[in-house]
Image (cartoon, rainbow, N blue to C red):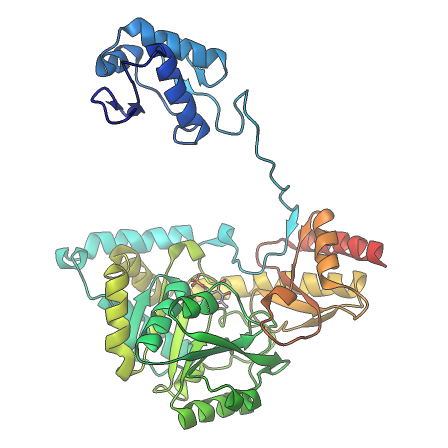
Amino acid sequence: MLLERTDSRPAGDLLVALERDSPVSLHRQIEASIRAAIRAGRLTQGVALPPTRSLAADLGVSRGVVVEAYQQLAAEGYLTSRAGSYTRVLAGPDTATGFPSSPEEDAPRIDFCPCRADGSRFPRAAWLRSLRRVLATATDDEFGYVSARGAPALHDALAEYLNRVRGTSATPDAVVVCNGYGQGISLIAQVLAASGAKRLAVEDPSTDDDAIPVARAAGLEVVGVPVDGDGVRPDALDRLDADALVLTPSHQWPTGAVLAPDRRAAVLRWAERRGALVVEDDYDAEYRYDRAPVGAMQGLAPDRVIYAGTASKILAPGLRLGWLVVPQRLLGAITAAKALADRGSPVLDQLAFADFLSSGEFDRHVRRMRPIYRKRRDALLRALADRLPQLEPAGVAAGLHLMAHLPDHLDERRVVAAARAHGVAVHGIGPYRIATDGRPGLIFGYATLGERTIAEGVRHLADAIAEQL
Ligand SMILES: Cc1ncc(COP(=O)(O)O)c(C=O)c1O
C-alpha cells in the first residue's frame, strides 16, 4: 500500500508517496507522484517545490534521485527552474504538454446576466473608512461570541434604516442578520417544516435557486402562484392550501411586476385567514426610477410577514450580508436555526456595515447609483425600441433588470441560443416557470453594462433574431 508506509510522508509542504519495495525506481515514483498532483490540480501553476536537498532529506533518498525527477518533469513541461530560484510548477492541468485540455465554452462578449450589481462601483473607500473606525473602536467583547442574531449595533442601524426608507415596522430585537437572503430563506424553510408546515407557495415564475431548493430540502412541497402584470394573483392562493408564501412584491423576479395595492391587501387577508406566513423578499427595492417608492408589506402586517433584505444588490453579493425582520413568535426558532447553522455571521463585517449605514454612506451609495442604473435601463429601452420594436418591455420601473415579451412567432429557446452564438448572453423566462405557461420572454440584466455595450448587445441580438425569421 502506497500511503501506509512510513516513507510516505509530507516533504516540506509536498506529499510524495514512496514505496521502497517497488520495482519502480525511486526517481520515477517521485516523478509520478508530482505529475499526478499537478494533473489533479493539487499543485497549481507557480507553486514552489521544496529544494532538492530538503526533499531528498525528508524522503531519505540521495539528492541525485530528486534532481533526476525534477529534471524529467522540467523536460516534460511540468516544472521550471532557474538558477538561484525555486523549482516551480510551470503548467496547470489544462496547459502542460501531454494531457488534453478541457474544452470550455467561449465566454459571451456581452452578458445581460440579471442577478448582478455593478461590482466596479463598490464604495471601497467608504467601506474602508467604516472598517478602520470599527477596528479602532470595537470593544474586546465584540470580538467574542455574540448573539447568533448578530451584532446589536447592526440591529439598531438596520431597524432605523428599514423603518425610515422601507416603511417597515422593525424593532432592533426582531432583526436577524444572516449570510444573504440565501441563508435567510433556508432558515425560514427549516423553521416552517419543523413547525409542521407542509406547503410553501412561491411566485410562478420565480427564481429557481433559493426558496424552491431549500424548501424541498427541508421537506416542504413547493407550489406556484401565477404572476401577471400586477404581480402575484391572490385569487389563486385559496386553492393552494399553502402554509406560507414567498413574494418579491416591490419588483417581481423575474417579470419585474410591482404588486398592486389591492393585491397586497388581498395577500395579507389570505395570510390572516389561513394563519399563514408571508416572506417578503425585498431584494432590489431601493432601485426605483419612474415611480414613488412603495413601502414594504411588513409595515402593514408585522405579525404575518417576515421581511427579508440583502446587501447583494446595493453593495455586493460577496459580502454575504442579509437580514430578516421576524415576527416575535418565530424569533426564537429562527435564531436557534441560525445558531445551529453557523453561530452567527462574521462580526467585523456586521460592525463595518452598521457604521456604513449609520454614517449615511448606504443612502449616499444608493443615491449615487440610481441615476447610473437608470441611464443603463434607458439605454436598453432605447436600443430595444430602435432595433427590436417587436419585443415588449415590462417591469421596467425598478430594479436591475427588465423583461421583454417575445412575439408568438419567435421561439424563446432558439432566440437565446442564437443570441449566444452572436456572443450575447440573455436569459429566457421559460426556465423560471413552475407550472403555468405564459408568454415567452427574455430577461435583461443591465446593471453591469455601459450604455454603449448595451446598445451593441441589442444590435447583435437583433441580428440573431433576424436570422431566425
Ligand atoms: C429574487 C432574489 N432575491 C434575493 C437575492 C439575493 O440573494 P443573496 O442575498 O443570497 O445574495 C437574489 C439573488 O440573485 C434574487 O434573485
